[in-house]
Image 1 (cartoon, one colour):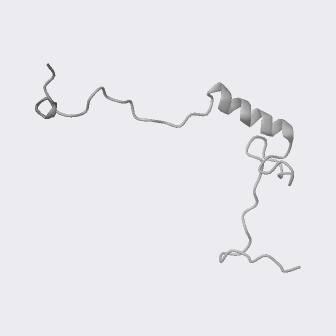
Image 2 (image 1 turned 120 degrees about the vertical axis):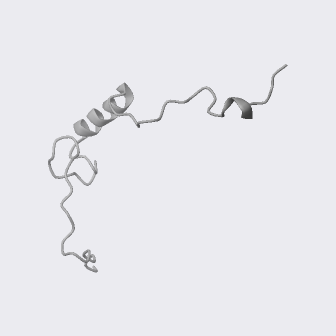
Length: 70
């Protein structure tokens, strides 16, 4: 088996479970267990995680650039 190449700065940073901080399980990567994976899924589905967005304006064009409506 061929050894994996290391990044230029030395060893790769240790990755941890984003929920509890334990080392990840290969079967549940990037999580350490099915429980942590389910917690993360629940957070997405319940809206605890959200992608920020800019509020939409009704029409961002200036008054003179809008076409006239009959």
